[in-house]
Structures are given as structure tokens and as C-alpha cells.
Length: 179
Image (cartoon, rainbow, N blue to C red; front, side, top):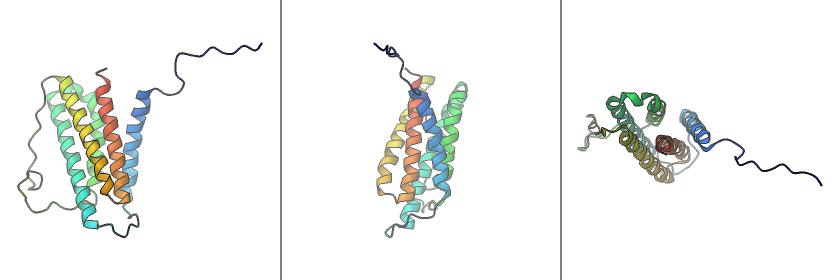
């Protein structure tokens, strides 16, 4: 009778953490790649001004998230090793999304529309709470971008999907230490 190997208790293949870390890196690369080619997707009913406004809003959202990272890092410099790589990706997202975005409209009373700086976000005194707030902001923005891509033309939808995926991976990585 042939002998069969006993099953291992560990699963073959990469661990979930390494998959998500790789997903965050590849999503950032995909954002840069799709952001570099803004050649249009051939959709006849695509409105350049609507697309530019959608890009501008997404860029503004990334800049606000970048401001949240900066505020947390200013309040908790010891988190730099953990947050700097994610902050760097958020900065890249803001840059890529700003390319081809509409210039700000006439002042409408909101701080970001009038060109004045947005108010500094409040940061919890506890580091864990500050990181949880960042994770929550990443999750909410990823969800918002997922909804926005439904109305976006194909090229911008791919970009928003990549940035949303990166944001979801960031949220996961930020909360991974809590477990």
C-alpha cells in the first residue's frame, strides 16, 4: 500500500500580510502607470470638464488625507517608520490625480474652494487612536472613490479603482498592528 504524506497544518503560499503589502505597492504602481496615459478611452459621451472636476475632487481628497498623515506625524513622530511609506503613496496619489484636474472654481465659501488652507485635523493624544483615525479616513475615502468610479469615464475609473484599492490596503495595514 502506498504511503501518503501527512497534511501540513500551515497553508501553502504567501501569508495575507505579504499579499496586502504587495497589493498596496502594485496598486501604487498601477496608479502611476494609468495616471501617465491620459489618452482618453474613446467614450463618445465623456465630458472633459466633468472628468476634470472629478479628478480635481479626488486630488483634493488625497491632499486632505495627506494633511491628516502630516498632522499625525507631527503629533506622534515615533510613528514615522510605520506611516512614511503610506504617506508617500498618498502624496503620489494626490500628484497623479491633480494632473488634468480642473482648476479651482470661484470661491464658494468652502476652505478648499477658496484657496485658503484647510483647517488642521485634530489628532488624538494616544498613538493607537491616531492610527485608527487614519485607517478610518483611508477606508471612508476608498469607499467614496469606489462609488465615484461608477460615474467616471473608463480611464479615470481605472485610476480611481487603483487608488481606492491602495487606500483599502492602507487601512488594513494600519489596523494590522491592533490584532
